[in-house]
Length: 508
Ligand code: HEC
Ligand code: HEC
Image 1 (tube, protein in one colour):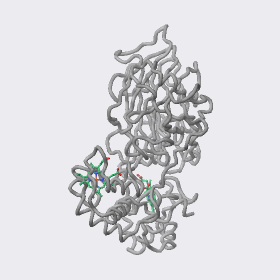
Image 2 (cartoon, rainbow, N blue to C red; image 1 turned 90 degrees about the horizontal axis):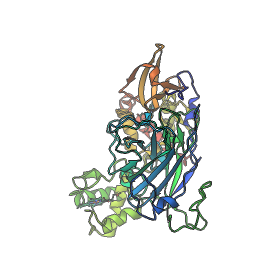
Image 3 (cartoon, rainbow, N blue to C red; image 1 turned 180 degrees about the horizontal axis):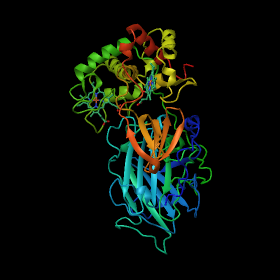
Image 4 (spheres, rainbow, N blue to C red; image 1 turned 90 degrees about the vertical axis):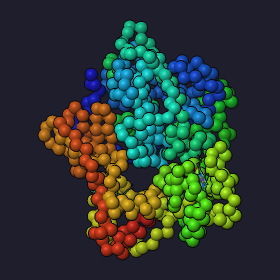
């Protein structure tokens, strides 16, 4: 089988190309369901019938066999994202029945979802074979669980759900997978929960597997040299629209262009925060907060016994000053969060404090000699060896051009003092020995059951077939070493941090 995997180690490509993304190559507008959706793998509800299909799946690295069509659709309501695939297939087979088993070797459909378009590498996967076995992963920078993930409350059904196995049969024609994914599973990464009209996510819909016509097709094209579904840079764009399938006239959307009808107001994103935090207000707010809110939330904004952390690295449901003010002043209906009796001025100070916990390095007002810091970055620190800033430098580590807009001072300080004790997705170090005896050392950019893409210390992207590897050693230690607070005198360390705090795209 697997004749489609023609790439082997040695088919090397320019790693620079890999870093590029092709967002928005395809787009789909997800409409609200106009009727109840019953998860029965039938798709006979009016809501599905009226929903527009996603554009045709593409065969990115198809080599031979019959190209079988897949029609995918999506819908949403306040609770769920609904997804359906109708797969034309004259050879349907599936054998994996173990939860989280390697279902992609069977006839299988998949959806990989990035709820935050600014952070496509935070994505969630759902793979379901034609007998209804599911595999899930959570590839995000906050998830600390193992290689698989237990989403909450997913309902799904495939045409052959319930069978212990499905062999190919002469009368095979098509199979369907229908699923409802509770949106709350994405609360940590999505801008709003439930999404608002105009909210944009990125995702890809895929189809793979089967014994005959083993082929892989995707809704959003996967740009070469990528050969993996696990390439969030290639995810297509989806937009949640408040309009239901029923409110619409005849063709719900033009299937070819997926255009939204004229006159619909765009879902303009609200301003997140307005400028740097006032340090004095924040300090006063911290006092008030620690006195009046910690019976539920934790001290200093940490997670408490009865309420979430307010300053951890996650995306929050309430992000604007207005939203925070409203939550504190009026409480949050339907939850334990009470209205605060504090005067407005104090509420504003608490808002400033919560903002300071969340503020990015660029907004934190960190001071130091930026020019000296730049000298250290380029010189003694040798940071350019692995990091790019504004188009210059190495690629083994993340591009730091916009790091001050993405991280808090505390995160930068931590990277420099402790290194990265738990390497993040996309930067997991690995050493692979090929059957030829040669070693490839670097960081894992993508991997799936069959292949691995390793960005080598030689700055080249190595595509490795697992079957070609003799040994795969996952290295615990990240290439990012800490201890810079000890290696550098205190003022130089401060200057280096100050330089990083200036690295934003808008500051260019
Ligand atoms: C009785 C327990 C309790 C107390 C006291 C309390 N909170 Fe909360 N708070 C909660 C809970 C529970 C939530 C989560 C609500 C939800 O699920 O949306 C919350 C949520 C919040 C949020 C929204 C977080 C977000 O981004 O979605 C803010 C802001 C907040 N609290 C601030 C405060 C402040 C400031 C105080 C003190 C004036 C306070 N809370 C006191 C229980 C409490
Ligand atoms: C040998 C290569 C290498 C060198 C040299 C290096 N880094 Fe890194 N750095 C990395 C890698 C790889 C990561 C990503 C680690 C991870 O997220 O698991 C990283 C992460 C970081 C981060 C965190 C980025 C984020 O997204 O949170 C910062 C900040 C950083 N490096 C700054 C520096 C500075 C400043 C220097 C010079 C003093 C430096 N690095 C030198 C490889 C390197």
